[in-house]
Structures are given as C-alpha cells and as structure tokens.
Amino acid sequence: MKWSIEGAPAFAHIQMELAPGESIVTESGAMASMSAELDMKANMNGNLFSALAKKFLSGESFFISTFTNGTTSPKKITITQGTPGDMRAVDLKDGSVCLQPGAYIASTEGIKLRTRFAGFGSLIAREGLFRLEAEGTGTVWYGAYGGMIEKEVKGSYIVDTAHLVSYDRHLKLKTQLSGDLISSLTSGEGFVTRIEGNGKIVIQTRSVHGLAGWINRYL
Image (cartoon, rainbow, N blue to C red; front, side, top):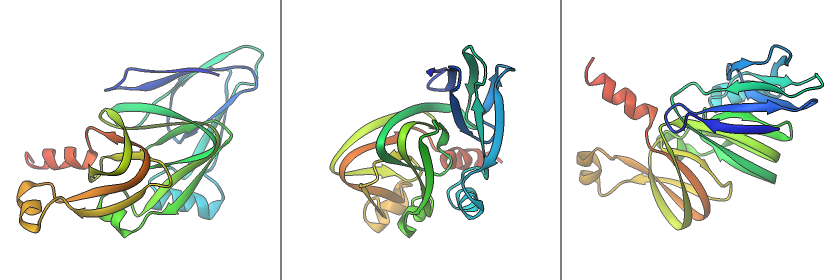
C-alpha cells in the first residue's frame, strides 16, 4: 500500500494506491474519488449495539466502507474528511490510540474501533462523554479542523477544551478551571483539560466550537 497526505494543513486529503488484494476501511462518506475497478462494501461499524454506540456516543458513522482491489494491478483512491484541516497517520503494533469524537477517517483491516467511557470531565471539556479507541496492528488515519501539533507530555500539560485530537491510552485527563473563578470567567478561557502522565498528544490549532461561536456573533 502506497499513500501520502496532500493539501495539508488547510485541505488535507489522502492519496492512496492499493496493491492487488489490499483493502482500506473508511468512515462513511470519506471516499472522494476512486478507480472504477475497486470494490466497495458497506458494513455496520461493529455489531448493532457497537455501531449505535459509536454513532451516538463517539460521533462516528453507523456504517463503514471497505474498498478492496480485486484486480491484478494497483488502483487509486482519494480519501477526505468532513471539515477543512489537517490529517495524520499513526502506525500501531498491537497498541492503541484514543481519538476525539469525529476524528477517525480510515484504517487498515488489522485495526478495531472501540467506544470507551471517558468520564464526565471529558464531556465538560467538549471532548465527549465517550472516547473512540483504535487498537490492533496497522495504520490509523485521523484528522481535525485546523492544523495539528504533536506534544510530548512529561508530568502534566494544559490543553484548551475541544482542542485535544488524540492521546496515548494511559494518559489521564482531568477538567479544571483555567485559573481562579473570576479569572476563568473574565478571560474567556473557562474550563481547560489537564493531561497527566508520560506520552504523546496531538492538539488542533482551531476548534469547530470556536468557529461556531465566532460566526454566532455576526448572526
């Protein structure tokens, strides 16, 4: 499988070439274009209850699409996300990564998606009451609105609400005020997410909630 992320950071998309016999799994509606010879099959995102949980609890689609190259020559497919912004890939070797609701775009067949309870603090922090966890061996592609920045957490780190895109499973997330009560209310920062432990996180430079708030001022 050959692939590259192009158009980043504003309009990232994945250009992928599937070798004969290879498949790629994507969220519903992620395919922008593809070779006519590729086979496409839609399935529920897990069993019935799992698919419902992913849709209503972690912001993912009820159905997923699998594209397979059943020919004898390489075939191409272009994969996009719903919002303008950047994309990234993470290679897992019997490991896992946690994603914010709606961040998942595509994965190889060795990856399984699970919904985990993230805690009420995560809900207050606009990261969702449930988190999506991708685990297994293979590659996961994910994206977010705006650019994305990787940080190495050693001890603790503060991220504004709705800006955390992905993080290592063993990291702990806590929601707190950005300062004292008066400062938190007057500064416009409000709640923030405190991340504790040692591991990697990826944050987005913009948030859809921030965009919606900016637009509402002019409506």
